Image (cartoon, rainbow, N blue to C red):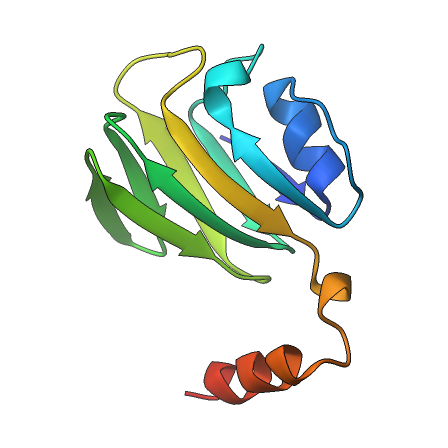
Length: 120
């Protein structure tokens, strides 16, 4: 299975055929995707938060599978590796979210809080 390192918003958008309007932060609407992405490993080097509306898939973190059904919120942080396995190849799944690069919050109180939280 292919592994793609998501080190920027542009990398993620290019994978799905989406337009990048800002290099550090962006709203994602996969209903506008022009490419199908399935059976792939993502190595996240950005922060991401997604709401899955009606799209059922399996995400694998380490050895555990998580069944993501309608209304599931998933989040990812730099360093996480996630396997995506959709039940079917679907163009434009009903998923919305936000991705931002760690540089966006570098040196801010939020970055400090996240670093503290990561110690747990």
